[in-house]
Image 1: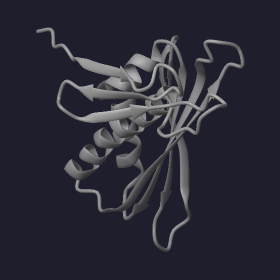
Image 2: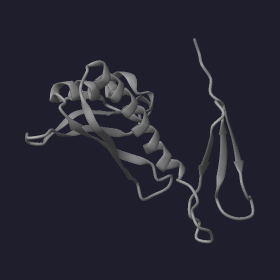
Image 3: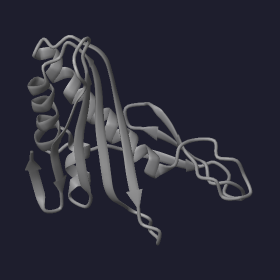
Length: 163
């Protein structure tokens, strides 16, 4: 079954600035902007929101899977960084996602949750991986134990490689 999504975007002031207000088909407002030298930026840029969408999508997957695995997470943040080309259209060439988790979480449960999001569940990651190399990592802090960090998977135009 094919599903569709709709967006209505309005360029706020065609004579000045770059702000665009968006109404999603599900009824939520968004705003985009970039600094054009003459005006101050009032909202994230469209490319920043791509990274935000990736962070939101994968965190929902991983958080849900960890909950199902009954892993006691006390805090969970995701840091996403993207490297862009200097020349237009200034596309992302590499993205790094670091899941920063604290709690009495088993490293294997966290690793597997990230792997499933990166290779199976997150549609934003799947779409971006057709054009961009994405590294999926974690940093796990547990009371009284050494911090654990690991590279879980690399996805991209050449496919997925699970570490």
